Image 1 (cartoon, helix red, strand yellow):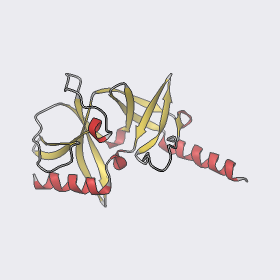
Image 2: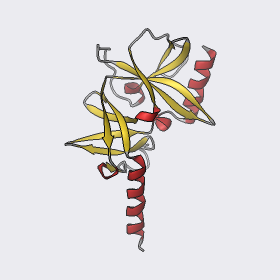
Image 3: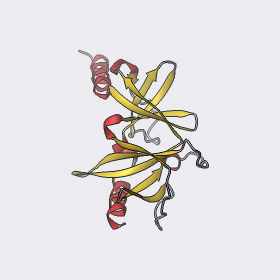
Length: 173
């Protein structure tokens, strides 16, 4: 078997493993998807308490039924222009792997769209942009109808150092 056919088989196996249900949401005109099993809940925007000396994309913390959780603004994390909050802006509460445990955190998105069942044959690997562009956080590109949905690996959206800081922020608050 040659290298090209082995790579194609690996790619197909990866796509099958990524198949499943995804919560889709928008940031500007772009659509993204998160594995539904990582999503705890979706909540309306609420008052966020800013925490000093945190990165700009860390909006602060919220009190979610007695538990303080950190919240990030995904637009800023992805270096997109910030936008005023609307009635469609919401927080997706997710469980993110960190070390041997999990960190509960919120991510602010422009609007939640729907839950889609994306099959393996609809998923292609993330494109290569060269060594200077980090696409590690992209699971793949879902092709649904005539649109492309970036499927995110929420465990890799934040670096290990950033996640450690988020975990400490939740505990300290």
